[in-house]
Length: 510
Image 1 (cartoon, rainbow, N blue to C red):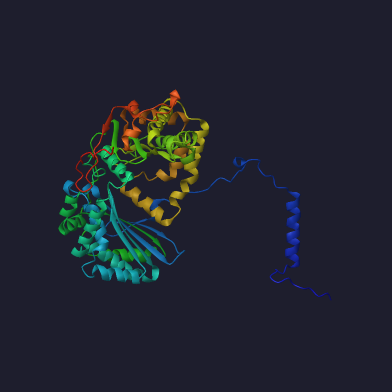
Image 2: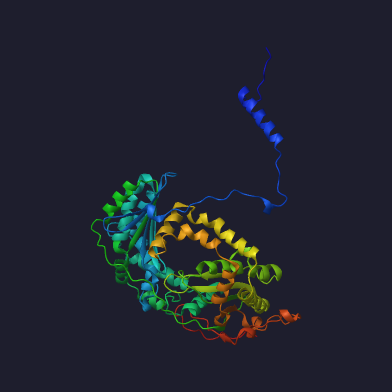
């Protein structure tokens, strides 16, 4: 008998496996693989994806609160999200900052049964995380917990929401943090730019353009926060989402118990457009930096506009698609005037959003980059896009569509947002068909209707004496540009970071 020596780590192969392997090898050898000549010739099987339907995951508590449940046993974790309608739009005009402060202090200010420090320690001990915040139009409270500690963590979570203490020491500390941050508003170009653009687009009295002053922050009392909390945080103004290692029966039972004795309250009103009309023109704010930051735009469309999908595709081709978009090809790739340029057509639910193009460029090339951006916008309005551009854009939206639902938490967010905003129930089921049906003519029609150069406001933050004349060394006629080509420039004052009142001009450095 022959002595067979096994190689260390080798796998023993039986006769049947060997025979199958040899048979497979002969088949492979008989069927040569044909590789495509170019990457774009690679063919993939069609992607099969059906978006989840919210109605299949929606349940209702006995008090009428909707609950979306997406169980997942992948990890022994549970996430609970309480979403409340309401935010900055509910603030009195002289109390800007109230929503943000209330949201922060729900979590940081302790509860009526547990001090803030003890609450922090107990949540840390349970390895649980609780966050609370209010934004422009909605508030969110989120609990992330181990399944093994969920009951106790959820009890603390409900105490935070139902019985906040707003401890004075914690409120004072937060107030100091906010005021310290406000002092830095004028420290860099980007923060000045964002502030000025918001005020220009929405006006200083609209909740999207309004910012807190020191006087407003100092005036916010614990009673103000309690009143805001009572108005917004209650079951009549609530949608719940749950995902993780929990059954439907378990979570519904816990939620029913948590709602016991909690007055339902009245839903808050929807937000409305209280902004001023956006003025066209060229505006600038002085900041001694080597580059200028530019906004070009006007008010846009509502989410339910019949042209919403064609506008989305049109903007993608213009400046929303990254390195394949026209603006970045011209301004960055061809001319080297900016590292990044983009456009967006932000849509709001209750009122029109904003069309915006933005970029940063060296001071002497800001005017040329602005000229090219306006040329590309006009080209989008006056000439059809190519079929290839359209196909690439539509394919991108369709191929990336499943990412909208790639996580349970992300899917919950979609369900909750859609219910708050009354999105049509079949929107996601028909989304890809709507994108696929967009034609070249649809894109041009959308551009001609919704891109309105006569309404453009241009905002520039930078060193104006270097920006205004453009590049004096430029000799090519088509490349000559100065900011006065686009309208009579109007200087906007830099604002005091604490009062938001205009500051006097800084003395010139000779």
